[in-house]
Length: 285
Image 1: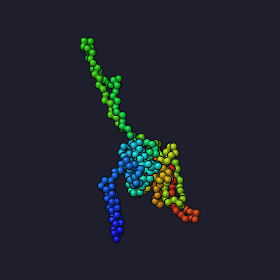
Image 2: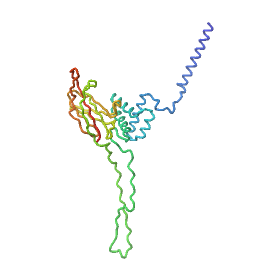
Image 3: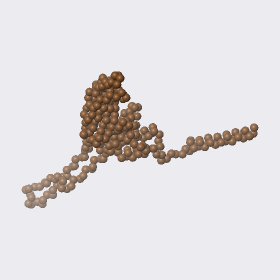
Image 4: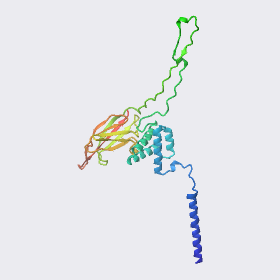
């Protein structure tokens, strides 16, 4: 009996010591976590980190700083990571966050800073005004012709002109307007019915992510963006059309308008009918 109490006492002492040690390490004097890399964050915290970077970029337009911050996450492809998170933001209804993420992805893909709407902006401040040289100063010479021979010559009075205040030049457009180079009817029973597929290329025939597309119909409209499905292409976007309704498609950056897009009726090999779709291709000239 005494041996049993002996072992129970040892076990109780061990448990008491272990509990006291854990309490001291976790509550009384926890070890601070310093110099932790963002790459060690959980996936949801990484999403918050990307959203903060995209918001800072939308406010400052500083693309190198945004790229440096994103590199700390250790993503294999930061552009695809931004596009994928933008798709998740749209799924939960946070369109403002998706807009900023898509704009940053587009800027990193194109190599030039843009606003969330996809328009390039200037990141440098206007140069300070340069003081005019003496030869550029306009002056007024006051003289008295009547007393010119008896009085000493009057000293010319130099009145400098005030240089105009620098004004901010309008932001340049990100390239020429897009042309509708392809409009194909798609009948594929393996695709969702009424699927409208859109692909956007630049002048070098490279797909462009983050491009805003406006789809309208008689009673409404919706905005979508390219690049949210990188597995189908960085310049790819799609939309499900309503049966019997005419749709129109245009790029927000300026493009030709595809109109009269009513889901076509297609037939399978067995004669069954289903709704087909369209594939639109836009490209910069």
